[in-house]
Length: 110
Image (cartoon, rainbow, N blue to C red; front, side):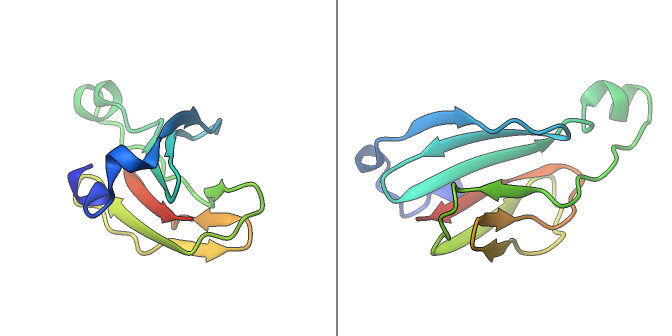
């Protein structure tokens, strides 16, 4: 989270927490005045399945973070666990993530 918040005046953002429901991923948001921080985690990437049972998680595909029809100015992704499937795609409705296995922190500039 440190890299994702670098350069943001956290005390001036007035962040409000939120949750975006999704079948395959946990999506937690912090929406501020100029930025949105999003934590995305694959629901299938759990310690008990991966470490104990040796079951690798199915990747999450076609995940789009909707911003209520508002196109963001910029989006930067910080992948978890040394994963790097690529950069997010900005579209008219929000941000689309490439297929991933673990998760990421997404920094969106409004």
